[in-house]
Length: 313
Image (tube, rainbow, N blue to C red; front, side, top):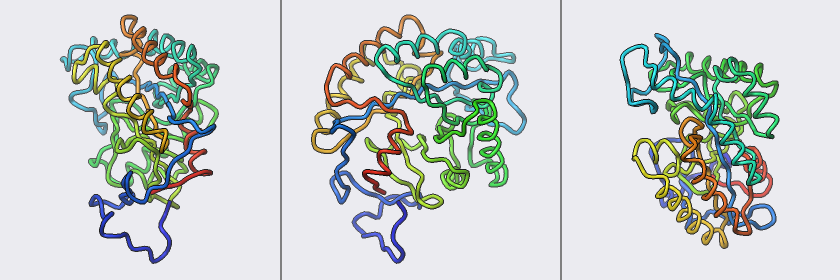
């Protein structure tokens, strides 16, 4: 929430050297968070659907270390490209079915090229009750500070307009490709009416950013449990991953008795949707939801609850 006119941030809470939000430590002046029905913990599952383009556009930027296949290969990088498309053809259905088994409606981060080229997937996600949020144009065109402000503004406007055309509804949330942002991205997202952003991974609770009119909410993804970060980059085994999810939940569930907490999982259908992995996801979700006081929520449900009941920032 934007500070009152004349507000001077206490030196104790100076924080980082940017102006996107005020530092508000958990053990400082932050008010206690209460979830619906006095739940201890909110569980939100993001399913990321994006396309690695056959040819990276001349004005595009793609991480050199983009996950998939056996790593970068000479053009055409068939193994990596087709490995990632496994998610669109097979993995997404397995993943969404597993979430539905546990009564979870996914928050689907969908890029423009998926929405435009896979209309069946758009319809399927909508039929499953998923919330579709914006995810840029493609994995080959992520936001970075190499963009000019004019180019980034056009990128965001085009992403939102094209996604709305393909889905029939405006997106309320944003997850950047590979969490990519420039130093001005929150402000540009707020200008276009985005309600929440998932790129900032610095908390176990939502918080308000100082962008636009101050209504942009950060819903931090639990980065250590991001499947690319853990399963791909760190090569953690699935059995250990399940233990990480359980251990994370146990700690946050205990803390949530005093002050509500949140787990936001970011899963890729081409990775976690593989047949040998999905049973482990089922086990982890079963463990979490075997406890009382867990709120299954989409991104929009979380931000709506926080706006009405408690704001911090």
